[in-house]
Length: 473
Image (cartoon, rainbow, N blue to C red; front, side, top):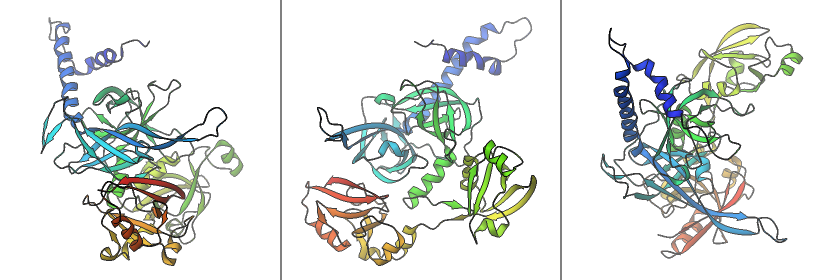
């Protein structure tokens, strides 16, 4: 059992910084109880201010379990349940959580931590507000998802693109570990930019604030009550908290949130290069000036980087004064830049060279599909989606394993339609095992279903088939 000293140690550490100098002839010892009370009150007020915007997320779906007594693996399909946390980032009912919390969910329920009326929150642990949630989109690369509930005037904690942290800064993790709603834990920022996987272009905030299963998707806030990250995962040999918690930085979460809320997907920002991390072996073999950093391994012909003068073999040194020491540094510099024209410094033959490169957002096939989708013709109101027949034009834009059916290109945001779980980019191939070949056939099949009747859609999502089910309303 660990020693119960973290909070005491933190308070004692803070005392020299916040305690006023003792007056001559007067001991500072007598002031300490008062300072501790003030510190305690500040923490309590912070929790009271932040907790009403943190929600519990309950998910359910179907999964396979291994067989026994000689039966094949995945022999049974059972109903499974999970839970996580989320944070209300807009008072109109928009919620950010982790993509893995809602992955494969057939039903998503959001539980508010208090009775809410307009902007007045009445703390009452005996009352909960329960809502079915719509999944607006997920971004697996950053492990961020956006949900929408039909509510307004909710307490919210906005995600700010400028929210940054420093090593040693005090932070609080809020969520529902093991289903214990509105739990607050405290720690410090162990690292402001930790690259967990050296081959992945992702940076996380590392903290020793206790984070346990069920905390995923909840906010990491600073001493001002600002969201600085979204708690995502832990590294542990035991399965429980060992002081190694990781959160997606708020600026990254904000960028992803904006894209998912507006379009249901996230645009990729590019300058037209392929890059990889430099290792000592790579540096030695290529005769590079340093054995760390990021190397340009390819330059797209006619792309922004080539036009600006970047060459294969250049070492990326800085983007807009941000040092580029790793692939996550490059990703952050591209996605979080305030200006599309980037000041990029490269090392060529060991000598610095400053170049101006215009970053571009790669077009997404769904953008063009939405452009030629006539809402009057292609809106499926019962499902709250805009869809297209998978014809030759659509087949040229997206690669499908089954090149037929109906392509979902957008979702309505007005709450119309059942909570089907459909996302932009899904291809609908069948309804209750009946093949669907057109939008009109989909409408007819939906209209023939009675209220309360189960509906099972076979969809293709990211080259994988899956079933979505719901009851007609």
